[in-house]
Length: 100
Image (spheres, one colour):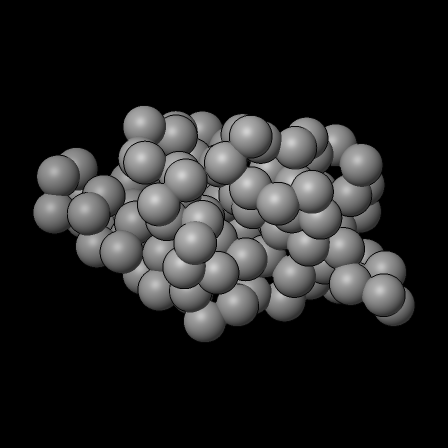
């Protein structure tokens, strides 16, 4: 089974996404979107090449569009995936990616 881990920043991002979705929509919607994002993380771990480079990131960081967000990740030496950030596509990605 392909493995992935979440950085502390990615955990913070997920928490903020859940809170925002809960506040604006509902607990049910927040749970659905959380599961959707985790499902995309699993897909990335199974097939890391599905991501692409973004001009706002360094060469070794890939991103994958997931819903309204982009999941940024690194492929670690042992083949494991580290999810670095999960950011809304309309954010200032360049500024946020300096916070890796």
